[in-house]
Amino acid sequence: MIVRDEELNLPHSIGSVREWADRVWVVDSGSADRTVEIARSLGAEVVHRPWLGYARQKNWALDELPLLSPWILILDADESVTPELRRALCEVASRPVESVPESAFHVNRHFVFLGGVIRHCGYYPSWNVRFLKRGRARYEEREVHEHMVADGPVGFLPGELEHNDRRPLEHHIAKHNRYSTLEAKAILEQERAEGAASLPARLLGGPLERRRWIKRHVYPRLPARFLFRFAWMYVLKGGFLDGVTGWRFCLFISAYELQIEQKLIEMRKGNALREGGER
Image (cartoon, rainbow, N blue to C red; front, side, top):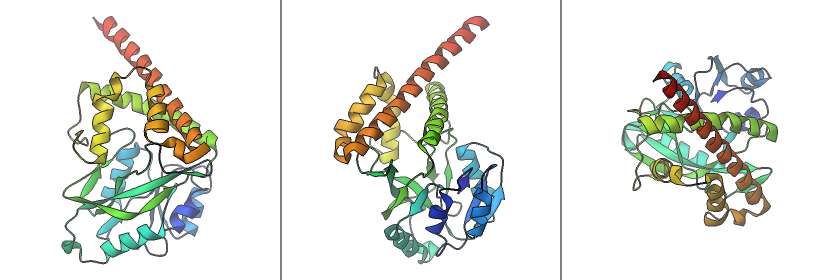
């Protein structure tokens, strides 16, 4: 786990793996609360590493920590492993590593928002590569919403992670403010050139590749994208089936989309002014 100020979440995340994981590593980037104390009290090994960015911090952990197990699970501090997923992870890890053809596995997760579970809204299912053979996958160099790129076949596991951030909504709003800036910068970079290590954007690829293709080639051309985002999440992706929680969640994410859109306009205008001044 990479963490900072996660004292409310760690008892749940570490508690979901401590009884069966060989070792639990927590990479702290400067917590000001009781994160380090709580992590150690729960049996985790804590390492300090100044913040490098989401992808670089995780890749640093994969490269520099003395990871000895043949299989590694990447877990966020606001996530916990459900019993069904635990059984699936242990079943794979119990087999001789050379007998497993996959280099990594996608893991599904569901979100908890304001006490309700999100099962629609385009946020479920939410597949991400999280379980990997040591040395067979790395994170793409991307500022936000990074994904793992595996060297070899990638499978899918039954069971789910539960994403439930127990910090107050004020924290979520501040985080989305930071994320929207990073996302706008990432969009500008994609418009110029794609990095060699980027996750491919393919319409007929896997779920993450398909999502990336839509975000690069369709979504940027839509006017008032925050309205399309709300309609897509709430109507087309069945957010209304999640009741009042779905309504609140769709509004929240649409506001985030509006932040990205307006910051992107600001950045493009700033770039145009700088380029005009240089000429």
